[in-house]
Image 1: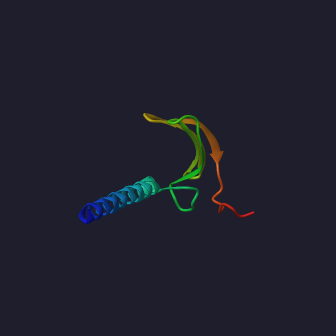
Image 2: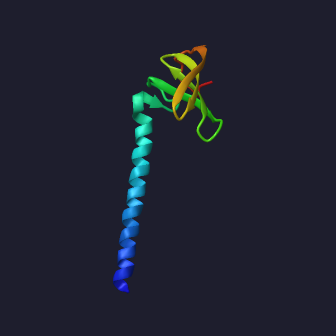
Length: 95
């Protein structure tokens, strides 16, 4: 009985570590792809906001090299809907 409990605990710890590692790597991968940040300074692409439309379709407002864009994404594509204009390189959050 004691060995069954210890085996169960070992399996639980290993699976928990695996889930935590996959979550961490997935999160870090998304934030480092092509210089993408969530509204930070010094990146090629800044995601200002996003609005899920359905489970697989999302609208994004992003800044790419100083130009604000409205994008629509789906599992198989990313479409530029509109160029919203140039933006200043001022820091965000300062009034």
